[in-house]
Length: 130
Image (cartoon, rainbow, N blue to C red):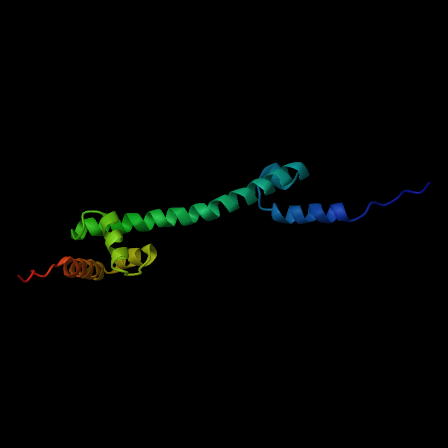
C-alpha cells in the first residue's frame, strides 16, 4: 500500500499559531501544546487588561483632579466638586478636567468659582413682603 500524505489543515492551524507566538520566549514559541496554552493565556490577559486600563486611567484622572482641588482650596474634596458640577449641568468629563488641572490650574479655579457663584445664586432667597 502506498503512503498517504496528510492534509494541510492542521499544519495551517499550527503555522498560524506559530506566527502568533513567535515572540514568546523558550518553549512557549516552539512546542505546539505550550504555544496553544500561552496563546490562550495571552488573549485572556489582553481582554482583561483592556478594561483594567480604562479603570486605571479613571483612577489617575480622579487623583489629579483631587490633588489640584485641594491645593487651590476651593472645595475640600473631589466628590463635592463633581457633585456641584453635575448639579449645575456643566458637562466636563474627568479626562478633560484632569488635563485642565495639569496644564492650567487657573482655568480649573475659574470653573470652580463659577460653580460656587451659580450655587450662591440658586440658594439665594428673596425677603418676603408682608
